[in-house]
Image (cartoon, rainbow, N blue to C red; front, side):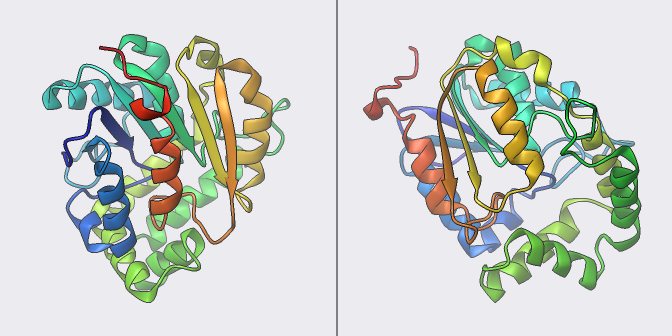
Length: 265
């Protein structure tokens, strides 16, 4: 936890994270500092990643979603604004729908409610494409070439120091087997059915070069729940945790009590 602002803000990370090594990434450290300047920021590593206990395989989205409740309970947080990044977005929406009394605002950053191809979802990767990606993770995760490629894809305009620290964090956040299992779990994500149950003010954000999955998923789903606004940012700002300081900070501030979206007492 960081900061002593007037409301709690829980950040649900993307694919993998590491709450200690995140502070070695200059832009991410600045990002967390900005968020904590106007809130009490609560961060955590999802089950099986970072500093959380390792598990066999990959826990389901429902199990990982309930970990958010456990984290909030441990932090003494009764209600919070939730910021979900990438794969953390569907989990955030599921949490808001399942525990409406624990959430008063939602920010979905670079997220899509469904991950895999279907007849009514043709822009998403197919199951075969997801499985190839899982095999690549098992084979390349942790290698210098593999982590450099991910860092370059996630944040091509980040500084060399950011990329090096990010690559180190990736290696320490999950084993090759865990990374592969997480890809297979993410392949199964589909929270479209819970979106109508989301009843809190929601802000959806992306960068202009986000994948077709993110854009099409957003366009298809925004009528299903109370989206207050949609914001797009230049390609230079990544949708992941890396180099998102000014973007996510500004967006999350829009839900602060001083902007009229007051956290319930």
